Length: 102
Ligand code: TYC
Image (cartoon, rainbow, N blue to C red; front, top):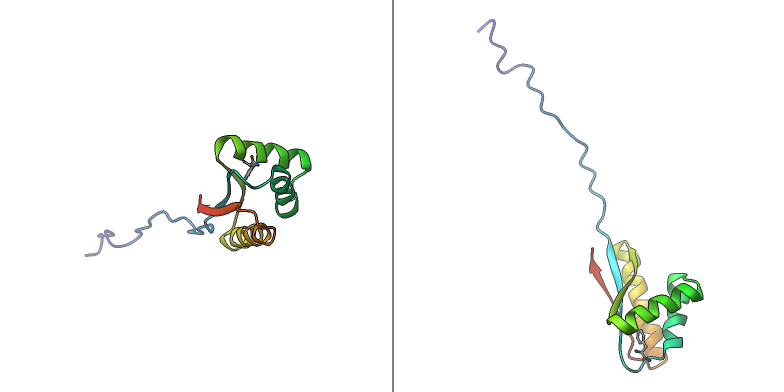
């Protein structure tokens, strides 16, 4: 068994397995009743958009039915959805906001 190195020096390539946490898209849905100005105010208030960016995204939702308004960690996405849903409910608008794994 002297010159048999079949079970010695066996090195398999390794890579660090640092999985990043999954990201979540926050989606805003269109409806027929929520005023456009309210949606613009929501995007400014909770997503830090300028009024021009907000108006653009609001129009996309209005025309296409849905748009991604941001991508976040699970916890931040949940918070954004809750903030938007609470704010819409307080103002009695049927605006819907949801999240989806990217
Ligand atoms: N469709 C609405 C209207 O015509 C405006 C609107 C835009 C509502 C985006 C919701 O997420 C929304 N008043």
